[in-house]
Amino acid sequence: MAGTGSSMLYSFLLFVIILSLQEMYREKLASSELFTILGGLISSLIFLVLLTFVGNFQESCGMRTGWGSVLFSELVALAAAGSVHRVCITTCFLFSAGLLYEVNKLSGIMLSKNEAKVKRH
Image (cartoon, rainbow, N blue to C red; front, side, top):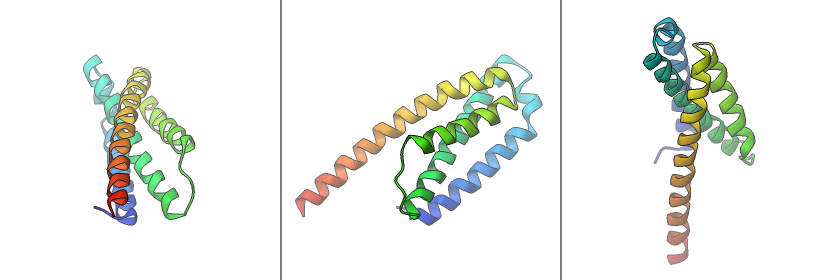
């Protein structure tokens, strides 16, 4: 498993790369309906990697993570989506909600496995 520091570094690098590529190709992403939906999907990936970065940063500083990091990450992703096209904001929000649901579900599974492992020892 990756440590907090390396996960934070990789997620920040992915954030910068995805955001840069999205801004480079924003005219192409705004050119058709399908590409606009793709722009929202790409922006939701920005949400995911930024949420990972902020969560790891808060964990390394000993801070408590919560809805504030989710809202911050979502606002940054929606701003990035808005720089491409207005419809990207809506699709980014919908894709991000789906990703957040899946991450929460996966986190619950991992937490229950860790608790079961601790109880055995």
